[in-house]
Amino acid sequence: MQHTLDQLRNIPVPDLRGAMQSGPNPRAYPIDRTSPFYTDGWVEARAAGLSGINFYHTRPNPPYNMQISGAIEQLFIRQEVAKRLLAVNQRLAPAGLELWLYDAWRPIAVQNYFHDEWMPRWLQSLDPGLQGDALWVEVEKYWSRGAPGGVVDPASPPPHNTGGAVDLTLRHIGGAPLWMGTIFDDLSDRANTTHYEQRELGRSFSDIEARANRRLLYHVMTEQGFTNIWTEWWHFSWGDQRWAVNTGAPAAHYGPMNPCE
Image (cartoon, one colour):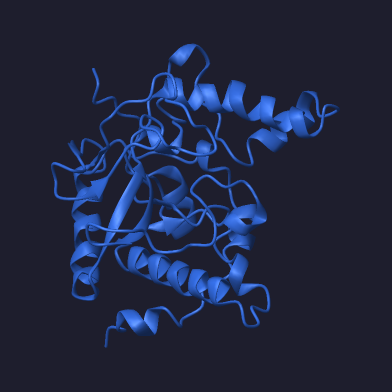
């Protein structure tokens, strides 16, 4: 029997850290070019019936508060991903809820900017002594490497360049987002999906609500086969290399795509 949405709000999110920290490097994981999904087409999410705004293209977008160079207005996703997200919305609709997308397919220029410029600069503003390899280890805790010169390695694309990864939250249909405990792209430990599972919440209604809403988001997404990155409550994917590692699939379905060509 399928759980009700209220029941999902009370089911803890499992500890996702161990497998992700000890498993194989997703960017080196195989991509099956014979998969029927490898040539899966793309759709614009809002044209498909989903809701959202490209966070990096449109202000206000804290903490950046600027349009990111290279960002696009569209929210492109793979057709199979769109189908699964719409199924999530069908599940949520009786409760007056829907998904809200922040980001989907990401141009490599945006990935390069955050990996090569914005994040190193921000980290060094906090710790000027952070240099060399230690700096890049810290950078890649938050932003995957892009592609030098803008040429994507077909065997190692950044997750958002595949069209299989999405950043999203829950909102009341046509209205306000649900409280998740942090803003999108927060870089603190509070952004970890299970942050509120690992502490006593006491009488904090804000923390209790954030935990319940994260649980709901996690469970309705995983019901449709998506997997989550444990450091980001908002990041889910289907068919990319991280998804393949998380699910134990022998290979990923998706390589890079470029709907702007």
